Image 1: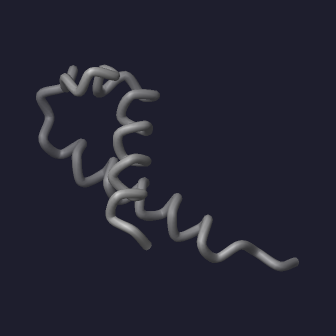
Image 2: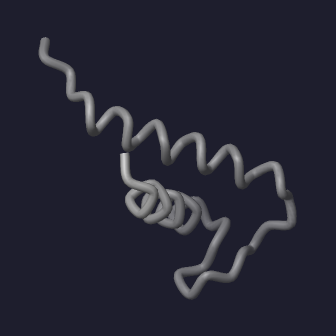
Amino acid sequence: MGDDLVYAIFKEIAILEGKRTPDGKWTIDDAQEIPKLLTRAFAVVRRASNPRTD
């Protein structure tokens, strides 16, 4: 799992949720949101690298 991929997904999730602008400015003051966003980004990458084979 590449750090660059996780970081890119992290930024996209933050932008989609309105917590960060596309130019990189944060719109939130809650530092607790950052680990939550990172956890979600790691989960997205993990799911993508281990596709289900039902």
